Length: 218
Image (cartoon, rainbow, N blue to C red; front, side, top):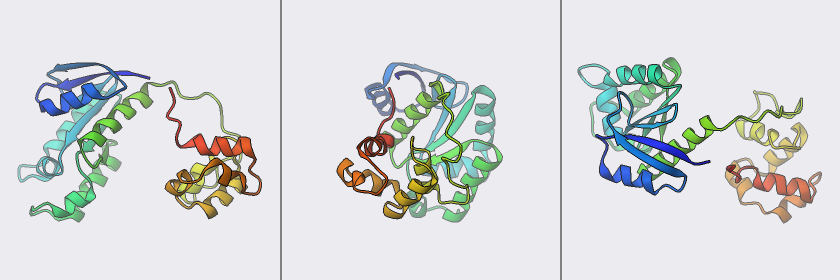
């Protein structure tokens, strides 16, 4: 699925060009947005560098970001704050605000205002994630219900529950996969032949597992 993106005209030219170069973007409009830095249909994105985030969320004059988040929530069906950096960048910032306080602010906005604050490592990853968010919100969700019992208890590790959501994988096989591949990254390194060697997994099921976290859809 390809999308159209609107970029606020105050964003740097390099970001606009990076959005235009993204394979799944069919059209880019540069204009003044009332709120947010990127808009993909009903999805609004506020882009921040780690330093921008600290200044706007925890500045001496109060939280400008809180106002921005409120305006985005009113203007878009889905809103996000994406950081052009990661948690390690927060540790290296030279500010009067501790990294723990910054993380607490991120958690507070996510939990209390319902707008997720997500570190995205760098600009390229930020654009990639923003486009994927826009696509996922625009796509029709699957109408096929998961079989009863296919998802292990919420008390189980997240990775095991993700394995339980793979088509044809119930709680027992999810547990087997988790014991052998405790992270999704470990499972991604397994080939079809290796998966077929696991008790209870035949060639067809092995192919399903192998593509489960690789197939990003049309």
